[in-house]
Image 1 (cartoon, rainbow, N blue to C red):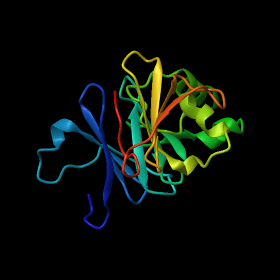
Image 2 (image 1 turned 30 degrees about the vertical axis):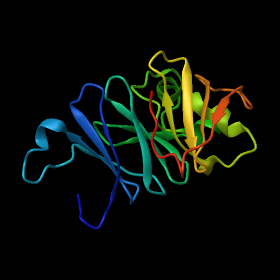
Image 3 (image 1 turned 180 degrees about the horizontal axis):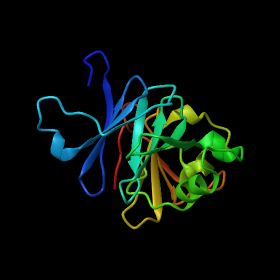
Length: 186
């Protein structure tokens, strides 16, 4: 990793064999964990295409795909073996995308090891409301898979049913955090 590029996110795959490192430049580098002890580890792939710094990364259950949010709230999907972009949320909602049916299957039906990306299919109901998408910073799915918590810039944590697919979904909101919520979990 070049010293002039800050690491903004690190996420281990579910099986612990790979790690995705998000950078302030919008690049995500994927490494094999076994290679990290070497003097100069080399990434197995580089994922390019984000326009802002990486803020959240989620792995699919099989360690083959990551979804990534940047600070512009863009969502991109990448193949971790090749670094190839599989599509973006904008392309999906507009009926496009690079791989059509494959993207749809991964994006809509895929099983994800985590749900930290606040901008993703199971959270899109949050963004159909009249609020600034940039205010939601992080999300997290409960272990049971029935609840979704999300934190915002105002220091609030809210809980909704998972997935949250409709606008103005019933929620429980709690204040009291001193600043922006940067991380949460169940």
